[in-house]
Amino acid sequence: MAIAAATCGLIFSASGFSGLSAAQKAAAAQSPNDTVQREVQHQLRMLNYYTVFDNLEYGVEGDHVILQGQVTNPEVKSEAVAAVKKVPGVTDVQDNIKVLPLSNEDDRVRRAAYRLIYGDPQLTKYGFQSVQSIHIIVDQDHITLEGTVNSEADKNVAGIRANSVEGAFSSKNNLMVRGEK
Image (tube, rainbow, N blue to C red):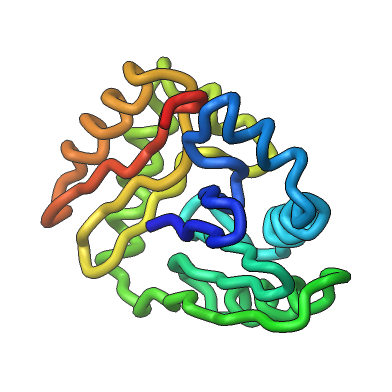
């Protein structure tokens, strides 16, 4: 669920570049929209209530920013839109962020998935980052993993852990391995 920026063909998420090759990252660093992209990313990472259970993604097309993803708290959605509107060089923000429905069962699945994923010895390192790179999205007992990991092995372990959450109907592993396409 990433947005491709039409001006430079790159994919961005609130946790950073998602699965870009070294050449694509170099091209992004030279892009005239680089300052806007970095500031949008910074603003999204600094949101007060942005958690491991939320996923925000964005695309920059000139002075237009497209936001999408899923959040558990409606305040995160409104804060994200307001913060991005304040970025110098941004004149328009398209809000495609979905607020996930309130559900005690989804909350139980989130907690169980968090314990299984971040409690795994191979994956605990991802829990110590200021913004965790593995995001656990639960919508009506369906788990989706979003974000980035360091290796294919870490991606596979996270997927196995998500698959083993009791009471979850399904799990989908959208994790990207850093440095791969």
